[in-house]
Length: 114
Length: 110
Image 1 (cartoon, helix red, strand yellow):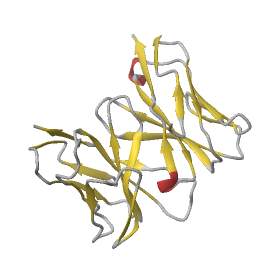
Image 2: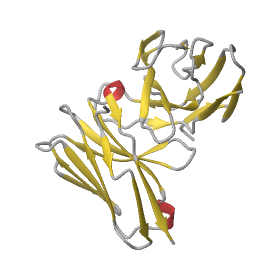
Image 3: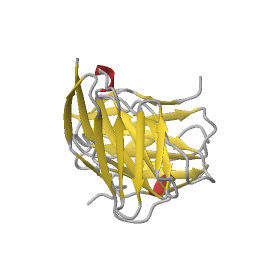
Image 4: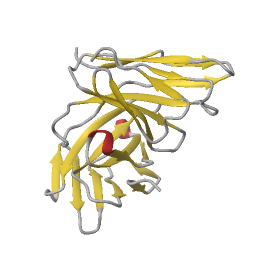
């Protein structure tokens, strides 16, 4: 079964902690993305990667970090510098080379600061 | 404000009725896509319409694109309770250049 998997589904973070959200895909996609979704809002791009060992900041990268050591994996770390991290985080992947291509999304991780 | 903006923000209809959602965008696009999101879940791709296309169908879905007005509409015919979800338009250059609107929340009453 090809797809994109995010874990955990729910995550609780204490003030000042770093937490890492996992995203794995077996679709052989080159491009991967992290989005943040707040209630009643659209998706905002945090980071994206088009190739292994390379990634670029999106619109709201401050307080987040990523790595892309393997094609299949694109973990997101929410650092203590992110002042308002409570949100729903979505990972996606897509093919490169064709701009008219759909994105495949994981089921999301809901992060709550306690 | 965001590139893609949906209208209305929320829509409540009876099962069997048609649901129409609209999307406006600001800059030139390669394509416009519609996605569906069930509550607390990821987005699922519904349909993509290219900038040189005017209309596209997929099952009960009909999408139109008017590049002169920078707008698109999604029509769901003969709606079902299972169509209850949020619907997002995504426009732009594709990939990381795709910008998502805030969505229309559709509620279909059985």
